Amino acid sequence: LPIFGTALEAIYLDNPNVVIMGDRLSRKYIQYGKNLLGFCHGDMEKPDQLPLIMAEEQKYAWADTQYRFWFLGDKHHYQEFMFRRGKDFIGAKVNYLRSVTTTDAWHSKAGYIGVPKTTDLYIFDIEKGQKANFNFNV
Image (cartoon, helix red, strand yellow):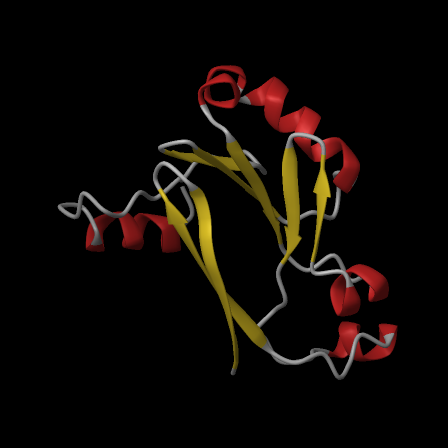
């Protein structure tokens, strides 16, 4: 576990509402009632394959859930990053999250500039799936 993860584990040791997933797997999953949430950076996986990857890696959670979502980090792709916020695929919805970081030298050279620094808040009902989504420009 990287040192930052170790520090977070120590801080939240006695908090039952916080789970630190310290393994080195690139894709993480959380089952919340009838919701299955998948998280990854999104630079290696093809978005249309993510529902199948989720179904394969989380067979029991897939069968036990009705609402399935992927949340991807910065893919550095103009269409997906700027305009396509999400897409429904059979079995799961894939969401692209914007970054809240400032533009570094690499992103500036590549032309990934001018995107609002935005954070998202998703609210899920344990039985009825996604209830709300709020976006905050920072």
